[in-house]
Length: 365
Image (tube, rainbow, N blue to C red; front, side, top):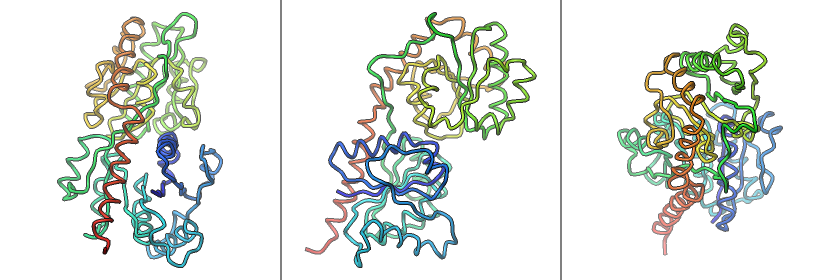
């Protein structure tokens, strides 16, 4: 089986780890996968850990030129073959802005197409793809609640569950131990500004009683929620660190003791799953679309994301390190049982095989 992994810029920047894990998992199953990335300076500098050089595509241009741009990619994939059909079995697309390109490319290559619905906001994009009856296509959803919207859109027959997985270390990470300085990381897209500000102020309130705790935050939330002025106002400059390009510094994020995750955007993130897998203490907003938050007994949920609610949860965690360790271990056990990377790869392979089998049934004898 031969697979193209087509990724848009946003997904590649924020979920590079997932793309790399999928490639490794497919390779372990003997499946050749070629990555196709948009021409983007940040991506070129970030250094994907790939076994082969990626193919770069033009992701900007009029919709009228999409077929031309897709044909250029097809020619690179098939080494300028005059007849590109049959060279690729599956085009798997990560990132909504690349869906139309992936559909065009799959049609040129006569391949099955798989679209990753990693956030609920992509359901409208799924309807806008205007798939034809003879398109062999599936939408992969990482959480069951995403299925409902696609079913209502009339796409239920094209939906398959493929829950993302975490890398779980052999041993849990030691959190809140005397041998290291305690630390909290606030991770967010920053797009829900009021919730992020409430979480930051709540953390700062809790830190007033714990002057030995460092606070980290990713650059996106600092910029979008205007944190820096608040850091100065709370006089915690010497205890606050910004993590630029957090995907490149995932190791630093996962060495913290506690993660505060205020987002309720119905978006899947491997960083949250990895934090669970390392047994970090996690305090999160109540996003019922993301089942690990809802189901894991170890995650402390803030139902009403007020400053006071965040301060209370963070303060409780800092004051009860043994309870925090037990909660982290419960999250780790949940991931080990329900959300390992191998389970995700198996679900992807099932989807691929279904589309390949579908092709076999329609080809003339």
